[in-house]
Image (cartoon, rainbow, N blue to C red; front, side, top):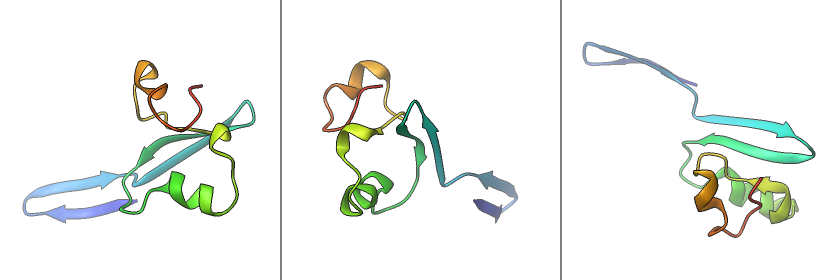
Length: 68
């Protein structure tokens, strides 16, 4: 979570949001520098089990990952 203040504005939001649906890992939000998908692949998760859900469905086919 990113929580706090930036000047006079309140900041509150998820940095990472992941769901597991239909035996796939859906990355809904990834605000990290290194990338959660890269970390999952490095840990041995096949790319076909990872969906970059923060991309529009029509764009997912242009990634190396599952389309959902």
